[in-house]
Each structure stands twice: as structure tokens, then as C-alpha cells.
Image (cartoon, rainbow, N blue to C red):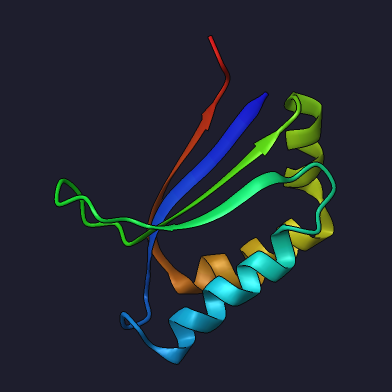
Length: 97
């Protein structure tokens, strides 16, 4: 199993229509991709960092994760929305020990 997670902040103002649209469109674009399991959108609440959101999802194995990464929905979302709208991010991919 691979758990793919990203924490990020948007260029948009908190609570803005643009922020809402980004989160809505991310869910719509990414959740239908084959192999995506347990997709979550999370609001970051810790005072230990200044990121605003997190996405988390699971894949059965590395092959499923690689297929997601190359899927046209993911590629288009990263190109058209993520790159222009995300101010900063940290990506972490985990496997169980």
C-alpha cells in the first residue's frame, strides 16, 4: 500500500470563491481516477507550520500509484490548476513498514 499525501497552501485568499473552486475541482478530477482509495481533503490546524490544506489518498501498490501519477486527469489537474494556484507544498508518500 502507498499513502500519497500533500500539504499545501493556495495563492487564493482564505474562504474565497477561488479556494472553494480549487478544492471542489480537485476532488472531481482526482477521485474518479482508477486506483484512488480513501481520498481525503483536510484543513491543516497545527500551529507548527503555515500550510493550509492536505490531500491524502491510498493506492494498493506502487503500480497503482504510478498509473495515477500518469493518468490524464492528474496530469491536467497539476498543469492547469496545481501549478498556477498552489503557493507552496510538501509531498510525502508512505509505505507500511
